[in-house]
Length: 116
Image 1 (cartoon, helix red, strand yellow):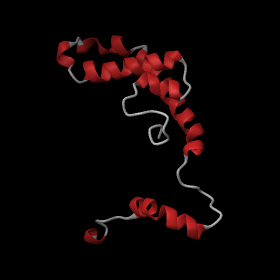
Image 2 (cartoon, helix red, strand yellow; image 1 turned 90 degrees about the vertical axis):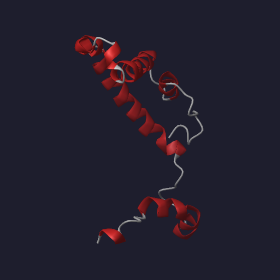
Image 3 (tube, helix red, strand yellow; image 1 turned 180 degrees about the horizontal axis):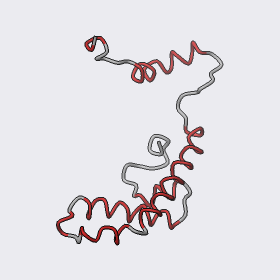
Image 4 (cartoon, helix red, strand yellow; image 1 turned 45 degrees about the vertical axis):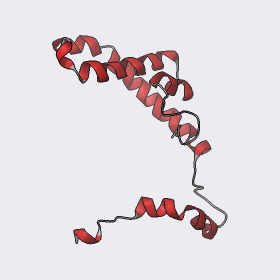
């Protein structure tokens, strides 16, 4: 959403995402640590003490839970500013002319006829 809204690029780190959402530095730290644990420890557990994973994540999991809840809340709060489709247009005819491809891509089920 933030990339489509022009606020971030696909090169943004988890910490930059947290900053863009207006989260505290502690949330950015938790996001970075969670990403590290997922990518390094979780993906390549053989090089780590996987049997001690509870010790590694004991404080991280509650911090990540808070961070995710805050991120979703902030994203939901700023979504209307970046909304690409007007939910209450003055003219539905003009709205459909502009947004037809979005509606088509969203609701068309190409395999629906073959599943009968």
